[in-house]
Image 1 (cartoon, rainbow, N blue to C red):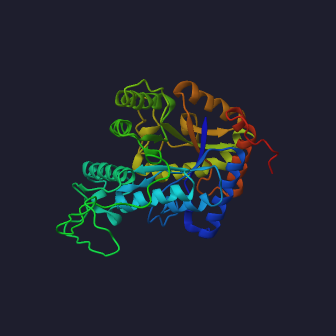
Image 2 (image 1 turned 90 degrees about the horizontal axis):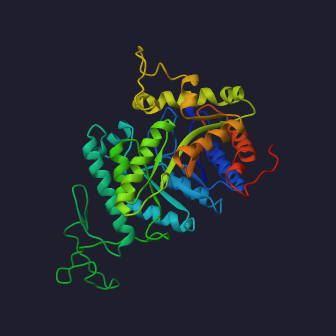
Image 3 (image 1 turned 60 degrees about the horizontal axis):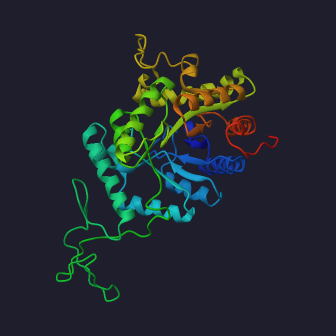
Length: 388
């Protein structure tokens, strides 16, 4: 089983300096690599003056960690590609792939916060979901073209390459019909440099919720990342991905192949200690994100929320814990991960312990206990040295 760390960097109230945040993430990355984890994942968010998500560029964060690690794969969950110029994004991912010697997992998403889209790319405005998806799909198409073709041309709803009317005539640039009209000297195609080290391109991962997004990813050579749902709800979503992927590839794809699951995790010596040290932090974050998402994603199939005055009234530790949280003793967490394997054939698990307001030292105590007491149950050769 593959284990990754979902490093959703948080700094509520902006009480830490950004230098401190970076040093804490570097400490985390080195610690999990030494223990035998497979990957680390960063998010992209903007304008978060509240401090719940404070990483505006996951690619730059990955480049920093690439310089400090050797084997750890570097993922983004996700780059919000609807905010990016597709060719600039393709170049940056390709360059990161070379910097890291082929360790990139390229995560892509459509966005979740309206204030980000409104100020970065109005075409990505989430109030028009259909337009946002068309932009996303065209962006992904262009990324793949740029990574796999020497020169590309493209004319779509949102992007045209090369820009019509550009004349290229330089004595040190040999003329070629590969990219230009030899009679008019007009550029007709364009190239990016470099191309990715991994061929044809780094593994693509899309953060998904809806059935349509799951099916689209499966049919477009994209792995998927899921986060909140219960095991019963996940089973249906895993099956949707498997069936669409099997049909696309013309082979029987095993359940769980191409899927990563994010779980909130806090490993402690007792169940009460896990709740005491991590419970308030994860609830604070869930209240932030579920203000937009609601609680529907936490329900079993057919289950309904009770009728309460506020839409998040059910969001308590006791309500959420059995649904999707890996909070507890090492023995409890081992049991719950084995359940995910048995029910979903889960192959990739991404874990998060650095919740809002949880001190770095407290979160690292959780990670180190997990390394010592949980990881060896699932990964041979993982480090089991005494933890401080």
